[in-house]
Amino acid sequence: MQVFNKESTKEKRRELKKEMTQCEKILWRYIRNDALGVRFRRQYGIGNYIADFYCPYLKLIIELDGSQHFTEEGLEYDKIREDFMKNFGIKTLRFNNDDVINNIDGVLERIMSIL
Image (cartoon, rainbow, N blue to C red; front, side, top):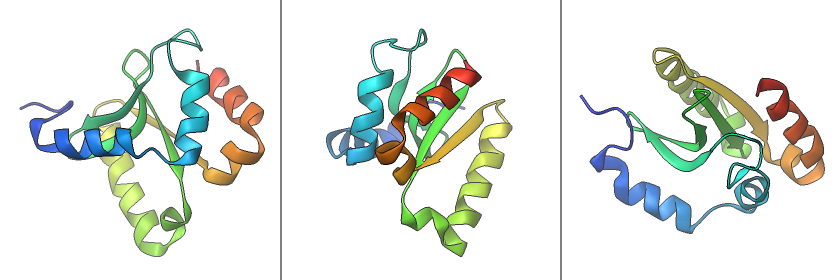
């Protein structure tokens, strides 16, 4: 069974890469091209989910959360998703969009502490 970048998520992944949010664009500027010493991939498919950013070497997902993630349904969905990722030994690191906009240095410091 294929888990990573399944054909069934290909079009959605392409679409998300073309339409990155402003916060995703900001963070991507800082982590792309092995800028932190490891390679991150954007809009990476894992199972039926698509991670904002994924580092295969560290088995680390970085998710940027907008307001939809703070609803009851959003929190429940994120919990199910994180449990799925844990089954593959993948850790999820979450930041809200305000963190990226107002405290990018703090976000990068937190990511570096994991690295």
